[in-house]
Length: 336
Image (tube, rainbow, N blue to C red; front, side, top):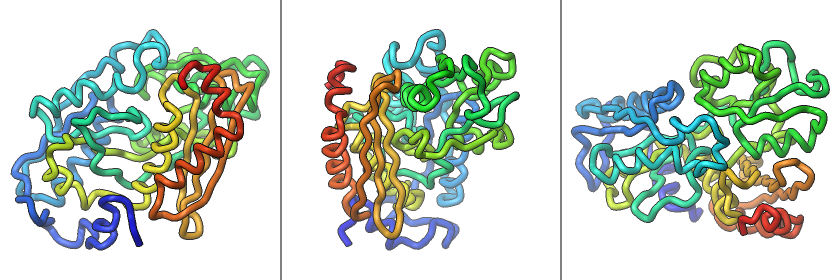
């Protein structure tokens, strides 16, 4: 089977925990690995998770975390779409890679811009956590219980568009800040409910705050949601070799298809775009939506195809979206 680059090697490889010391073949095992990470609690959990996995693979290596504050963490008074988008969360980490202060950066894949600079590469996608959006409220058990005019907080135009389409009587309001800040604003009564990625809550041991997981039919996830990705310099193949045992081939194929859809349609914080792929019956099942922020128009598509060809499947999905009206929506948004 002709898998995308890297997947065939991963599928043929023994599980990472089959031996105490992984050998990287053409490259010597690392003596020191520095991981760049944002300093939010969730980002640090993610970096620590990767650190622990790498320490188990390379017990003789010193694995360290370089914590950093990004512009995206500093600007909290405006919607992300209006201040530069997802790139504000990775620029400082990429600078650390370029300056040699870090070997790799750990990201939530949904927060990684669809187009990276040519100096950088996504070298590993790890196992995916629960990909759905989560309904969080202190007073209500589900979206259906919310009364007209109830205030729902979200940081995502994707979530906002789908909420407005399905619950036009609710008041959707912008919500910025790290996970703890968002939960605090909910607990202070600024919102009746908030919508968050379930993966972050579960990773921080806050799964009990989830009142309901939103069905993907109601709120289709963002490209890469729930998956961790690792970025490194494209000029450092040895880093990719170190990380190869961490790759989840199923997640990598699905996330690759999702990101290809988003990239083709100029997916960014300014475009309410959802793309979600699973392996079903031995093949990729890819669903995607493009919407206006007010939810008044939504173009949808779903396609199935070979696990070996996520890019081709994404191209088919994009064409189906355009045929369903995505082009007119993108024209109205002024993005394409």
